[in-house]
Figure 1 (tube, rainbow, N blue to C red):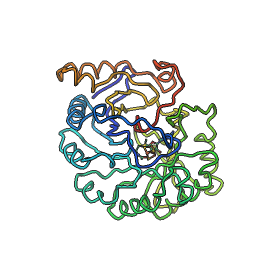
Figure 2 (cartoon, protein in one colour):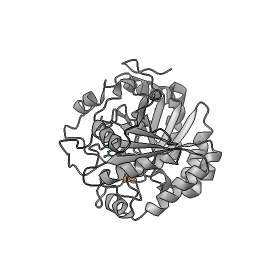
Figure 3 (cartoon, protein in one colour):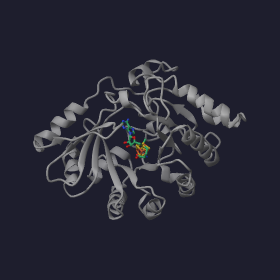
Figure 4 (spheres, helix red, strand yellow):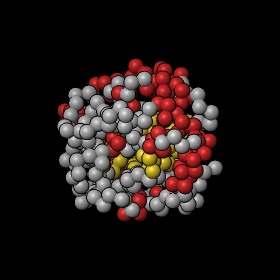
Length: 329
Ligand code: SAM
Ligand code: SF4
């Protein structure tokens, strides 16, 4: 079992396979003028497999593929196939915006990948266009329908944004009536990629819950699974659940079991740090597995105690501003 310097189990890797995306969610990246990583800067699939294999030997049991949008990377299904065969991976999961996902669902299922997080901030086509700058709601809804038809384990993620999708909170909760999904509302974080930093969080987890309670006063708290980042609720008579993720408030750091590797090979031991080592560079410098493993363990042994400390320790003293697509969420 892998423990960090605060005694927290580390068994979950979030792996960013690309920074590129076919949407432009305004809270994640600017609409224009994005400096994409070059192919050389991106970790190759061979490098990604090597890092995953090392980390799995070290104690990682669950890997979530994220990005950018994973399905825009060429040959992603070949990579997922290889990863699904890696000894020691107990759970492989994917986070996707759902635009290109539907045709891959049967193959994902055949690889044993059942846990899919689908991002959907609104059920309204015009608001979807306003938020993502692309008219792709029908494709995302098709993915949702196909995921349910294939009995996949679906979590629907919605960022709650003042002036953008507040009218969607209740319709999104209403989806849990007939769909066995978990609809999770996420506090907006400052990772929007354009350097603008809002000083105040408008919609925290408490306000989101109060809003839901006005329409669904019978909503009940249910037990949160181990290492859960969400507060979980159930509305009597509904098939699905509701979750609220205090991503900005950072109330879940005490049980945080995850590390991240970005598409350019940066290891992040906290969402809010600005990278603690670059594993891609170490691989390309020719270091052996033992050295790489030692470096990874060393970094995990110096983890910040929470997201506030990680943010304070950033080497770049600018406020947090990088795009979430370069982190993976
Ligand atoms: N493209 C895929 C998707 O959208 O699902 C995977 C990558 S995306 C960066 C992962 C998650 O991060 C999404 O659920 C997205 O809503 C969330 N996210 C992006 N920027 C965010 C922000 N500024 N605050 C909160 N969540 C954010
Ligand atoms: Fe793309 Fe996901 Fe970022 Fe939206 S949140 S721009 S879908 S990476």
